[in-house]
Length: 196
Image 1 (cartoon, helix red, strand yellow):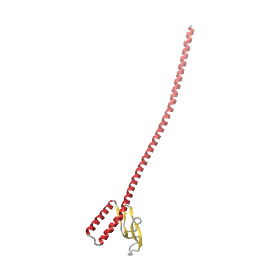
Image 2 (cartoon, one colour; image 1 turned 120 degrees about the horizontal axis):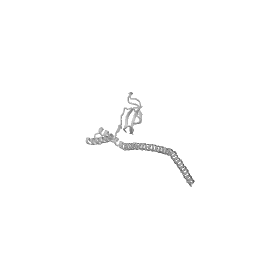
Image 3 (cartoon, helix red, strand yellow; image 1 turned 120 degrees about the vertical axis):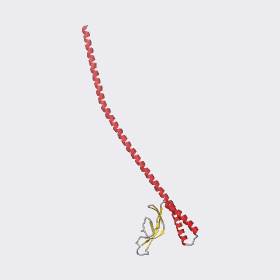
Image 4 (cartoon, one colour; image 1 turned 30 degrees about the vertical axis):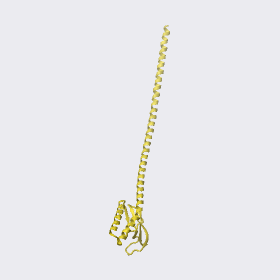
């Protein structure tokens, strides 16, 4: 009996050692698997971070482009609004130019003929008010004679020889109808006679 007892503990010890050895191998395998998994997970995380950073940069770039585009649209709309206002103002003032010309001609005719002074003063007051409104809107009259002919300001109605030899060719001899301009923009060209 003694022998059988001796064999049993030996077998149990061998089994225990074998189990311990298997556990160690299993733990080593698990640790090894974890170590192998960590770098892969880290690489995946880094790849994901890089992808997100690229998306963020792309989104920022897109937003900056949209903001710049919106600002350009605002500037264009502002320019178009100003241009539209200027065109409307020029169109309205252009409609009043013939009336103002008639008023000026009436004054010239009244000064040459015998007209009652009170009537003449009244017409002069109306003419002055009209002129003040035009000046307020920056309208300048084009009615100078003796200046070089400029296609941007004048319409040549006819050419004729100058009364003296000192007058050069293409000079404005006489203004038949005044022109008007606002700044650099001509509303109506002056109708003139030009020297040959």
